[in-house]
Image (cartoon, rainbow, N blue to C red; front, side, top):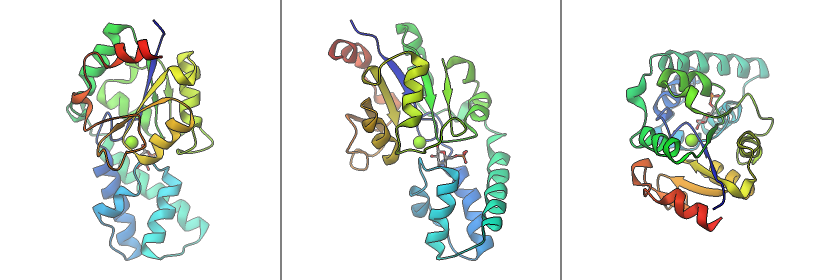
Length: 219
Ligand code: BG6
Ligand code: MG
């Protein structure tokens, strides 16, 4: 049997932070004088903070100075922090805790591979930080998803080859990054949106009990 390891995206896989990102970006849009809808927010999933602001400004058709961009990045994150510092374990998405328990029981190690610079804080709020064998977040990478860098660093932390890593992702950019890294990609969410993934599930409660065992024998 070959060894495998797991790399988890955070936002949208382990916890639903999209609603908080949305509220904080909406405030920025309001200050700039345009509407920012939940549909627009879909475009920001899996995307870095800086890139998110660029997309937001494109949506509003607004151009601002570098200094203003820095100010909005800071104010957006301050508002976002106001929400996530109140988060508790009851915001862990269905199936996530059970999946981590099953991996612990099977002796399969897992690390985090997230674009968020707030990932360590969020994991601590949820009481999950110490369970991960390693954390790769927005502070550890020079290139954002869909670049595979975040997951390749994750594989190193697991001491595994990319082909031995299973990536759980809810964003198109994340699935693309996992595929570029030559890892096994698992799309969590809408199957049509995440059609590039090797496997698809609506949420983590749907992962079959023998999923990892089967992958180990395939590998
Ligand atoms: C990703 C989210 O996980 O992290 C994105 O899906 C977010 O929506 C990105 O923009 C960066 O997050 P943060 O916490 O560093 O602003
Ligand atoms: Mg995500």
